[in-house]
Image (cartoon, rainbow, N blue to C red; front, side):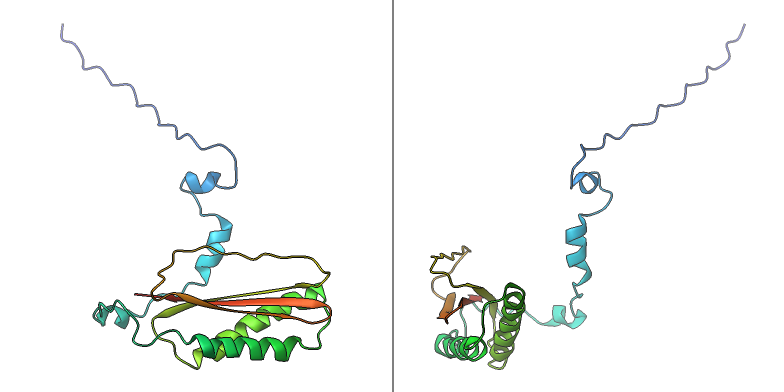
Length: 169
């Protein structure tokens, strides 16, 4: 008697183990990204295709230094002008920090500071005789990176503004 070939049993489907529940469970499973990072990605613009045609400069130092005195003058002028007679209000203070950051950034763009990335921080708070310490940390090249800071206070509020100039090689 001849034996008939045996049929192979169908292979069992592989089961994919999903990670435990949590805010990043779906991201780890490869399904979707975290909604917060997706929101940021929506505003990213694609680079100009002609940008890749520009050759590298291999420039390791700036042509001119970061204009510390000019930016210090801008900080003092804008903060004093906008907050001189203002009373502290939590809602209005939030709007004022955004406004001050935008105004300072716009004034700095007039100087066309090349190869420097700028970070502008503005803090406004109620003046009640309390103490406040503001600190920051980052990778820093002491030869080219710098910052400018200005503090202001009137009868009801205080303001601290800092502009960081980080050289971008």
